[in-house]
Length: 213
Image (spheres, rainbow, N blue to C red):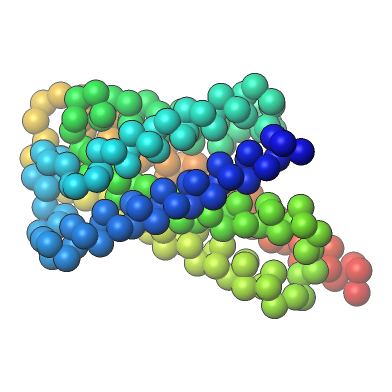
């Protein structure tokens, strides 16, 4: 019971952290404007106010969450998507923090965690016993789940990947570009896997409701 309460507080902490990431992005947007905000030099060579600290916190969170899942076997399958997701992020985040490069690129990639919030909400909702697919609350949760998956995760990652490819000639020779492309390739593959899992969960809940009716 104590561990479950700690898990809830852990998720709430991450929600607050995501709000802080959005605050960092909004502050930079107000100061630099949308066009200047996504210039190559802005994303690679500098670090927005609060961005480095946010990435440090995120790196620590994913490291702890990874250790927690491995320790208590909170995963399923031979190659769990959640463990691969955390591993890719930890590799990219740790090297970026160590070399103090592409910090702002990685902050943009954290926008996808908005969808993770709704994944956690779904888990809590099911644990609380709210499984009636016809309830407005459940339908709203699924609408938000799908909309954030498509916008914050799929479209956002595709745009970041496109930006990396079009600006490839602007990168200095080094590990930054290969590492960034590796990370985004991994994220896009995991997004496909997550989308399939999400569709299966959606179909399963809808079919269960049909059988109950």
